[in-house]
Image (cartoon, rainbow, N blue to C red; front, side, top):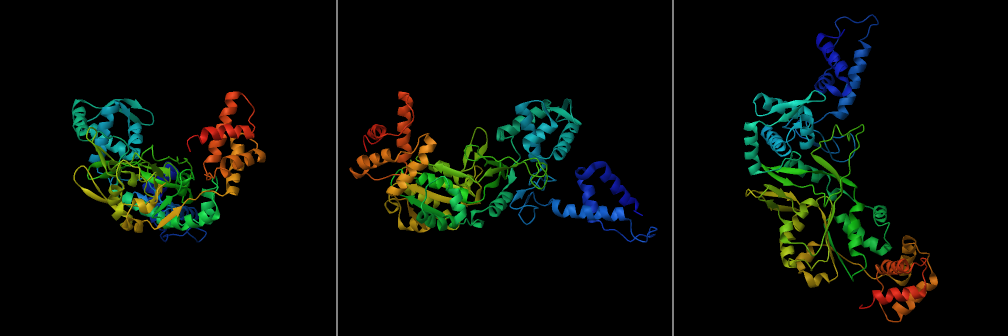
Length: 498
């Protein structure tokens, strides 16, 4: 027979269902069947109780949530890769109750009357935790009920005393978005999702560059450079696809990573997730570890970032930017690109000199970590974990000194295509532009506009010339057909000053 405590646990489980009372499931999973004082008539233990305990123990082995931390590694989770798990306490989330109170006050100040569940959804914390805080603030008369809401909830409003407190908090920092993630949890996530743990193969590279015409020799040179996870120079004549190659490198690694929306560091808010740089990949609300109900919603799943910056790059973009009017800090580009790729396009043409950029990164490239200064004077060490690609039309040795070149171990020249590759590019691009490939017209183009004038081939030119022909056909109202005359017209426009 089950004891009174076992019966009580079973009653709680029956009332709450499979997911409702986590403490009850923990208690049953941790318990072991004791020897019965009086055996049933069949001579064994109660079969229903034994079966239930065995099932619960199996479930908890997979679904147990750490209480001392809010993130898990692959070895802790039921699936592959790093997954942030929803915290059960503020301590597990790396937050104090005062931190959550501040977010609630500023949210109500900015948005007005709001339901409790909406507050919890906005600051991305479990409602069961937020509801306790709301009830306590209500009892302290810092919040009041404005009305009732569905699912045993209330609409909350700030009284005068609460509004005054909210104003004082907003003067320091106006942020009231997702609750920040602890810096230590972010560091753990970068280590678990680092590029250094990824080793793309030949098949991975071919899949990543499937939409580009890349010869085998180029893939053989790119493969080791990408596997190094450190940095490389792509140099060569303009128009041969250096930027296109750099933008597709990230596809050779894992598809997605988890990123905190914001990081909290000693009361300072550092905003990390940037919709301009990061592409969110929503999580389906299904079963398993990646169910919406199990994932810490302060984190967002994104495609591995590929951030491209060109001539607009300044030194300010490489440091923490503090907004004095809002009290919110913005993460620098290298932090936003961690676990991904950072492409410095048109290297040597930035508004800052190459010496300034290289002096800023010469140590991070060597040590794989960086130091950032916060507005409160605190200096923090953060990972420098991305593949840096310098794309330039100039010779690397003309831009930087030997000390820096040593820290970029791979220098790959993107050469001009051969005549056969140039023809193959036309065969690939013609259907995409709505043309049927015409060998005679291509022969005329190559003979009169390339070979006779000794003009070099460029990878971008088949696409650009076909665009010229297509636009001319649109204007003339003609059917899209490639002819020698149409290429003469396109070449006259395209190569007018080249």
